[in-house]
Length: 138
Image (tube, rainbow, N blue to C red):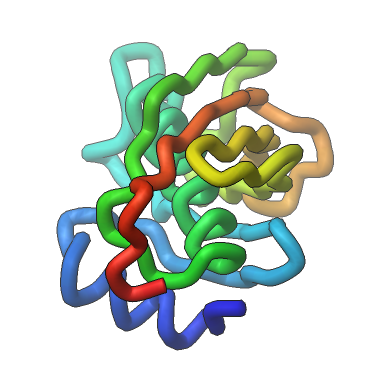
């Protein structure tokens, strides 16, 4: 199992453009936080859909890396999201992922997204990742 520190270091080195931070990872689960500021808001004062999709995607990736190791070329093959309610414009987005199945070539997981401090989800996503046959780094 890959540790939170190893995944955090990998993301900082190889994916520095993500503002997400890893809060927890293990046992096919992950929690990531996406900070929210003025740049993440859309007209109407709500968090933009692409920001929430990015948080969901990073949560899926982190959960998967926690299971299979650092495999940079594991990639998203699908991501479906349902926006459930307006997120708070002044609170971070917290994405909690649980992998449903990890096979040899595909992994499927679901992500619940929350405004920090609220127990009602603002969005729900389901995604699939392709796992490369050659797992350099795993």
